[in-house]
Length: 126
Image (tube, rainbow, N blue to C red):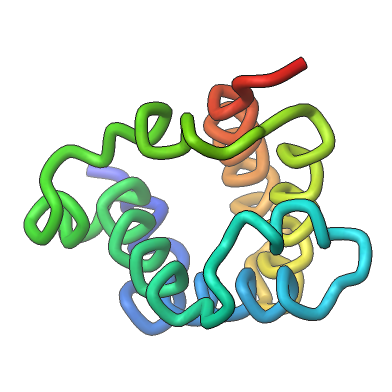
């Protein structure tokens, strides 16, 4: 059986590092102000939820589901105005986070395509 993305990344420490770096970037990059404004002042809760979600989504332990139930991503994101620009800002943070935590090129390309599909599905505004 082929290893999961979770295993290929390096398990829990690597997934946690990815979630942490993602939110550090969102907080630091001037060109992600639109999506940063959609979040609470303190990003720790969002970072933890992203880690829990990614764990299961990448093929590891279903931590988010165990704690909160089905993610219902689209429903949970409906209150936020997510357009192409917001999607692209989210992707900017995730692309850079994957580079910064040292995900190898082949795996990074696979994940980028998968992340884009999810981010694009979250759009609810033109």
